[in-house]
Image (spheres, rainbow, N blue to C red):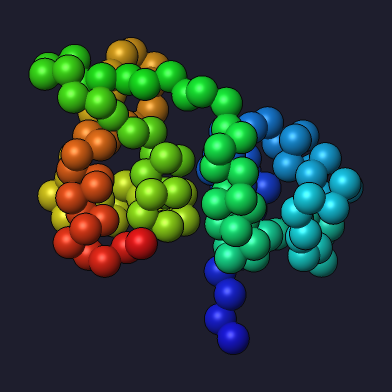
Length: 128
């Protein structure tokens, strides 16, 4: 069976937590990992998504950024990864293939995407 594995950094980005939090979750049994020969943690994507779904109501409030041009709400790359159920590392390329361009709401901000465009893409591509 082909399983996608995520790094600790990808998991931390998806949950918007510190890397140490992900390590603590492994130690407490909240999240299981596979160890690489080099001792690094890797996480089954299905386990991470299950935990995301389980804790969806427990999440800290996230700041909402808006498109400075027209005020539309934006999603960060980790949020887009969760909505479209993609690996964080492929979000930008996937959206670019579908004509969705990133927006930088303020200097130093990472890539953000219009929420309406992301949800429209989800509905047309069947990512659910």
